[in-house]
Image 1 (cartoon, one colour):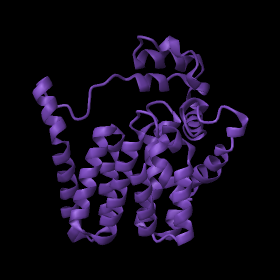
Image 2 (cartoon, rainbow, N blue to C red):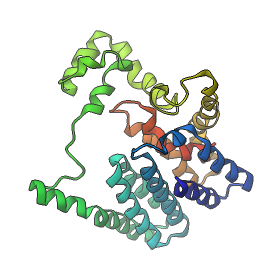
Image 3 (cartoon, rainbow, N blue to C red):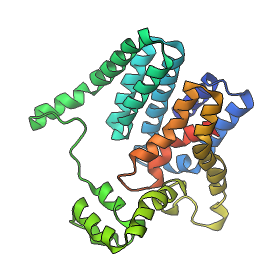
Length: 275
């Protein structure tokens, strides 16, 4: 968590935020109740967040300076984040796109090759282990589709009915019951669940005196997510646009699954910076 705060501070400096704005970014990140709640729990959030913010910082540095070693660091750290949570994988493509648009054409090929190569080298132990253990190449894992099954249950009603059912079966049961409700859940209900709270199931503020953290969430994080693309376009900075895209990509990549707030947690520092 301390490494995450340090990287958020470095990111703010790299993006040329004013000193007061940079201090507020770090302070809001440190006080964000979702971070505080997960500190003493054996979860992947803190380790993943530090690695993911480190990847983003290295990517921004490579975009602005053009140094190949920074691109290599971005690829390696992204692979380390992937070892923790596969949620990081789509950002290999995101980083490639932003390196493509931010660097001169004669440099792009080198950056893309180094990014992909560094990522592959750092992922190689996992692939070799899978081949040795299972006798075939497994890119990430072959885990179950429980998260997708839960996401196909509108507003998480009657979760017991999903027991021992495939994703196709759950969709076939829920969608015909009321297609309007189903699609409203998959778009608007999902977004409200994912961004409407600071952690799953109101665990961080069950009593009225603890409701105040929601103000920080709604005024800073939600506004940052909604306003990030506009801010990035106004500044006309590829680095700012990259930061603004992170919450959107995290949201879109989780759409096939269920909208629990903890899965949006890695995007929160970027929403705070955008704000």
